[in-house]
Every structure is written in C-alpha cells, then in structure tokens.
Image 1: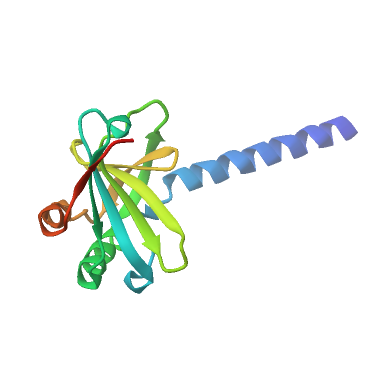
Image 2: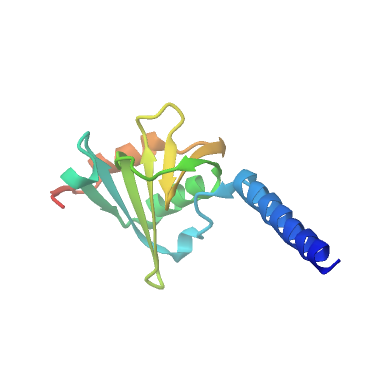
Length: 151
C-alpha cells in the first residue's frame, strides 16, 4: 500500500512538473519591460557574416528621445519561445541595455531571419505580437559615431 501511494505521489509530481513546463514554454514574454527613464544608454553591435567571434560595428545611443523610442518599441513586442540557441553562431544585431542601477540586459536580433528571430539567453524567440523597428535602429548607425570592434 505504501509503495502504491509513493508511486502515485511521484506520478503526480512529474505530471505537475511537465504541465508547468508546457505552460512556461507556451507563455509569451516581452523582450523588455524596462521603463525608458531607467535606461542610461543602449549599445548596438552589428555583427557581420563572421558572427560575434569576428567583431562588428558598434554604436552607443545616449539621447533620451532615441532611447525612449527604442525602449517603447521593444517593450511593445511580445515573444514566443522557439528553440534552444546552443551551437548557433551569433549573427545580426546585438543589443545591450544599460540601466541607471548598472544592470545590463543583452539579446541579439537575427535580422537575416524572415521573422527577426531573437536570441536571448539560451533560447531563440520569435515575435508573437508587435514588431521591432529595425529601420529606426539602422538610422542610429548614421546618426551616432561608430567604431569597429575586434573581440
């Protein structure tokens, strides 16, 4: 009787864990939920075809009006988890958001993919609602002084 009860508890825990994982995987999440007033600068790195290992063009956006536009756009985009990002090269547009308290948030927009896939942490995401204003971000590369970085 004790062994059947123990097996039922284990099965219940496993089913609960699997159900929780399925809900977590399918639950949309925002790219960012940071208020524009909390951001001091946004660093953009445009990675070439060689990926992050080969460097790229870098700019730092510091104008509060530009930061406000970019952050409001990023905060309006909802993401859906797609797959693990292990063993994939970093290509596209790297974004680092620096907050007033010194914390940073990093992700990469794969602008070459048809749906602007996003790499954040160990996962790839795809926009579920809203879209990233890539044309505005590209304008920043002509507005701000840029440099080429070598890793």
